[in-house]
Amino acid sequence: MENIRQAVERARAARGLDGQGGDAWKQRAASTDVDEWTHELNVSHLESHRVVSHDKSDPRSTTYDMLRTQVLRSMDLNGRNVLAITSPTANCGKTLTAINLALSIARQPERSVLLIDMDIHKGQVAKYLGVKFNDGLLSVLEGRVALFDAIIRARVGKNGLMVLPTETSSTGASDWMTSDAMKVLFQQVRRDFPSHIVIVDLPPMLYGDNVIAILPQIDSVLLVAAVGTSTVAEIQECNKYLQSSEVVRLVLNKVREPSANYYYY
Image 1 (cartoon, rainbow, N blue to C red):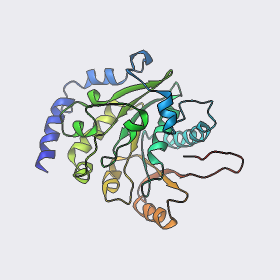
Image 2: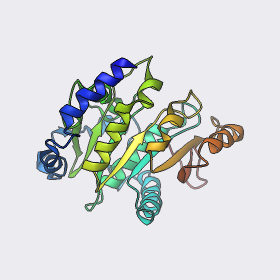
Image 3: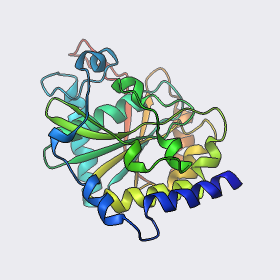
Image 4: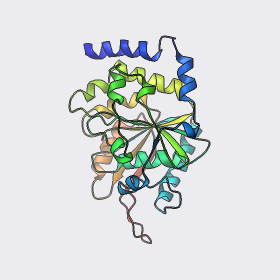
């Protein structure tokens, strides 16, 4: 863990968590002028990956808009702004839910969104959005870059959101999830993005202790299960770990509506 301790020290110096440079960061992070957003998302790429909620005329976006309303009502009522999205196992659609929910929220003019990919083993947010990056979550945790420099400012049409993608790593994910560097990151996010809805795409719950380790840093949790993939026993197992967390919703994916000819993803 020595490398993580050193990373925390570098990160504190780079991010101004000891009282240096905080105001300048806040001014930059608070900017929501759409003309300043630097990456235009490709609509064809989004739709090829079933990212649809940027387009309110797409009937599939209705489901995410309804979820948005329910989630925001619950979070606003309890003064929350950090929402983690996870699933019992893989292939439940948690990342697509996180992205589509983020884009749905971003369509509301009074809302700002920061989407963070924390699925270090298998980060997919950048792939689904079609964005390329050099430095992401791991670079920030290691103290090699400042958080602001790793965030991608993206837009689709007139709507923008901030995205912190992640590099993938087959080792060390659990150590990073429980590290002081991660705690420092959440402290900075809460300090510098108090008016944003922060959506965190976590790994599946039952694939190790990564999610359990990060839960104390999270305000609210949205659990995503899927018909034909998730079992009742798996959902019950997740529920045991979430007893002390605020679960805003359970989303059941891949349910066919009787009057529709498409799946909810």
